[in-house]
Length: 424
Ligand code: GLA
Image (cartoon, rainbow, N blue to C red; front, side, top):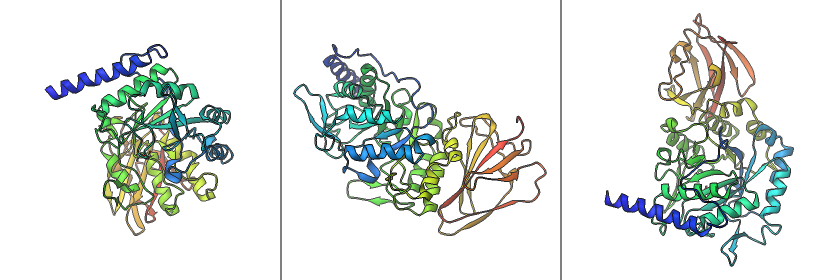
């Protein structure tokens, strides 16, 4: 009790002191306020980290911006180009952060102008601690100043990390509230992507603070193998899915569970890429690409630009899928959609192809936890639309006596949109 009172007082004191520093340059507010209209559906874009880590420069960013347009990704809905760790130079004499003059010789403002001229948005990365995870300057003690600098540069998105926070002496809640307040005070609508890997269960407190929060450690390019290092662990696609399963009640419009960025196109098989993308769509997860889109294969591009899959991710009801169960080795997920439709995904995590007989009546369910919607296959009829083959596969109907057989290849997914016929 005493400890938490102390922590609360410290949190308020730290935030007040930080606000006072820039009192004359930014109109500080008293509590976290999110900008309206950001993240109404899960954010879509691209980030430097999964493919390039720290090896980045402005030519890469410009090339990616060009490829976003020429590949059709922008028109498919991907808007943010996010510069992750390692863009930093030093702070100037007044404490304002600068970008690395060798990697970004034209400066961040010019880069933001370039990205904006393509109809895209620019994201940047910082950390709540003394240093970022890669050892660059963190924002601790400079929160209002950094927010102001990002706003001046024309930044649209901030990913805020949680490395090297030993000297913060405050909770994640306090530190993320502080940067949220600072962004609001700086006045430019900037999407806040929180990245503390689920360490303080942000889904329980961050709804009013950020637009998305990581629910997992870092992903790596593997379908189902955990990668364990002495001081940290990296998650596979399947690990991320497992960790996210139980958190669906916390996600919604403006505040999404983030099981980390996509690894599609980075070396998994095309089946695994399709399964990975299918599940990120089903989970209403942020779709932040992590491959080199300047040189991706047509097969990968077809996955990333699949309009029906993206529509399931971006559905305005904003509900993360529920897991119906595991049958014949398949994981079966349903996602309620606006207007009474459902998305349905059969994910095959096993090493063998699986043949499965669908009996629609078996899938009568009500989403008690979030949407309240019922599939009601005994009353409703749905057109069955296969998202990956782009073909209609008949209808569900009360009279269905014959089970519909599907084959789900190993490490792949079959995804349907069930279009409700009742009101159409
Ligand atoms: C952390 C984050 C990653 C990435 C790196 C950059 O590990 O979780 O997503 O931003 O830092 O150093």
